[in-house]
Image (tube, rainbow, N blue to C red; front, side):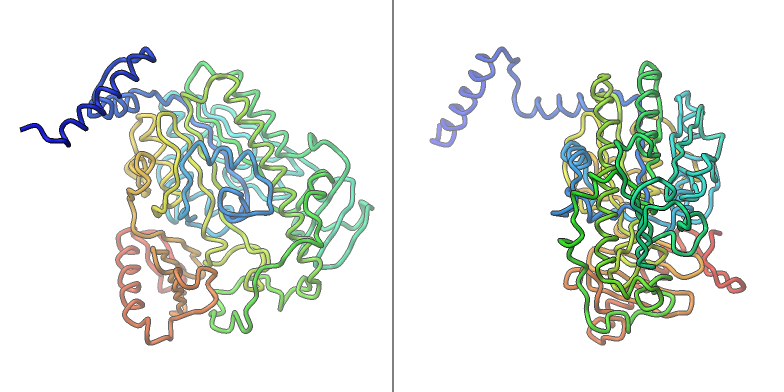
Length: 494
């Protein structure tokens, strides 16, 4: 018996077939279309990798992560074309440990071969431009030196030098409330107040290290477009000193800046090991609220300058016709504190530092946004997976290729972050849990308290949750071979 439903289905199919025929298409039924789509994705040949690393970049200052003030049109455009990871976390809370971790795909050591070396050994042209492994900023930038780079990782490597705090222009050392255009007496390499320095100047930015890194990367793309490549572009902004042409500072009048939300007695329930090294209470920046606003304005200015260099690189990739054969990864080594909880800089386990931006654009895969937990050390095996080379046994990360194909998928239930001499953090869907070598703990309900104002570790209502997280962290540390050494009182890799 033919039902009304049968008739409706046949009519829809006839309309669909007619539509395709009119536009010159090949008739195929929906099941076949899905199969063809999957086949097309499988056949897409990813030959190249463009690996872009920013320095000290907070995820939540990017437009694609919700910021309404900072102008990042190029990164936002990349985000609209790729997969945005809402829950990406670094494993090290400073430049050196984090970069060692994601380049080796290891939590606390550098066993095995680096990401660059692995691609190089598989017949890729590999190049480093700027800071990928750790470089001391501003020291190595001023000197034009390699820092802690691993030469075996690269076919070629290039440094991008700059004058940094010594750039002629309007200098400020904001915690000292010092403003001058004189070159003498500026805080620079290894000096105690260098992290509060900004310089605005008249110029086009072509003298800056990030501009030079973008220019060299563009040059390498042109030279090596016909052979598989892994090109890593390391941008040093918005790492201090915040140096950029004046017109970037003009975008962000400091008077319009709103400082982070403050809560009375916010840090009273944070253990000593959980607090930042630099705070309003122990640094003179706490005396100058207006200069705290100027810090934000300078940070925003250098983020926007860095964003323009990202745009220059990707625009050239498009112009060369390489986008359909190149996977693009953009990340930061860690986040940053700009006065949240009265904290400044990095080296602690809270969300502002551990959470990072991660955007991955892959030919043949649909753009999207995912809440899947991802660790930066997962990038190494993912890129190897995407280009079809082996994943070394020493790699501890897991490929998140399934998430790139389906943003609702996941490969991990939680993310682990570590400061060896302080403690460890486990970030789950609902909670942020920290344990310090002293045995002290922090527990935050991330659904009710995403800014981590109220430590619930002593709240009896969270006693069961706390026990579950303690057990989950113990299991995860054991799985990853991470122990707290009884002699050194530091976390180490077995």
